[in-house]
Image (tube, rainbow, N blue to C red):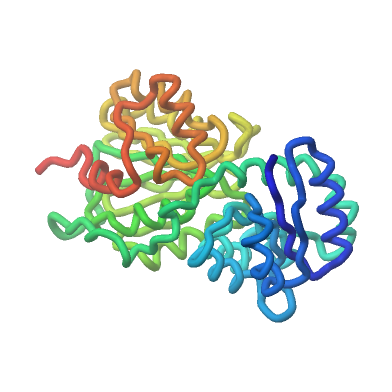
Length: 348
């Protein structure tokens, strides 16, 4: 049984969530709390596997509670708030504080919304229950040395090498950890992080502020070059095409692939076709199997393929499936991945 605790100052929301989640055969709502301070008093007794937490609450706000929780007693936490709309600073703050998922609560008609979105709610709780929070809370400044640059960055140079990263649940913090350790002249990167529309631009801006490399949301036709990471816009697919000696990204709409848009499989398959052995593919923390088949295509085309190991993943689903398919050449900890990809394919 997945033991869930609900922390929300609305009695209506607590009641509706309890009813919808408690009706599932594998979920038990072990407790509710009207504010975080009361919740903290009950955690040791109830031992929940997952928390569902609002942001606006009396005595302590949900983000302060989340930060304190992750320092003292990490528990997979879903933020369920009307403030956490797509692309909002609150949503990004919640993910940065350690939330494993964000669900936006409507300002009105919450009861009807919870009923209509029951499947998504239940799936999110199940995914959160499988999250591994051990070691996730380390900030960039608390870890090993950043890889030093080999030389100054020349932004107008081209490269025959390219690195692609695919990630989902737990990926926002893993990407910050990884990208902040790359030197300014690292091989160009393209990234799919499962995110909704209007979210990725602010996420990229946050990463850009803490990284030596340039990080930004990809635009159709952008060049992939050393020292630059391009992140797929939420709600659109990202692929790579060859233009002479250069790589350019293609940003396009289309149906979901492997149940996602953007899809890691779309990105990886494009690299299998356009880059072959000049590419490296890295599949990281996330739920489901998106990217596994695309990574296998990359490996069959001669690319270097890596998977994040179980110990450093929040959710081991995506890497596990890729390993099962034989798509992975090396399994690496999150600490090892920057070392593996920093100067991939570059001539000394």
